[in-house]
Length: 258
Image (cartoon, rainbow, N blue to C red; front, side, top):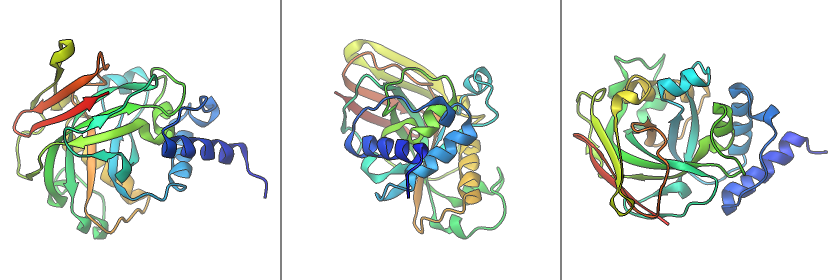
């Protein structure tokens, strides 16, 4: 059976994902609208056999949502191959967009047996642990900037690498108003943020992702992570070296950029 253009393009992007290559941009008809981009992402993800360790929310900044005229964020799978220990090294290239500082949650596998929608009232019962996280974001295509959420969603959610700090057992804190900072002393770069920049707050972003996972009838059969979106926006990487992220009451996380 002859492969469609969509199928051929997804093969190319999957190969780029697996071999850390950069390819020509995917045509806009597959990426301009988020609904089409999500279909393309799911097609690509279906061809990856590596274990999934969780999911990320993308496009969670309210100003960016308004600017790009999007109604909601998007979500994508996160693979074990892109999940690193705190303080490890991340190689970047010309298609790297930047670095983010996030709140991540470890979710109990009992979530997959739950009935009904996840709400702000019941979402916390599925949380086991929480931690600060650094995400390096970028493309596997020769793209620069963000013209639509579809650009990111279609390219495996734009995720490159994830590193998490020390996990803490979940407890109720004012997660919607915690100061955040990411810095690189070597290049004298320091960017402040707040957890209230994340789709109202990280728990609301978590609720969004869990309902999307539920709608797509996914069952990993194990505990998994949810990365809720950046507290500092997409911070440009001004130089190589150690980036340290700190979120009040959650702790710190580090990544070495090379």
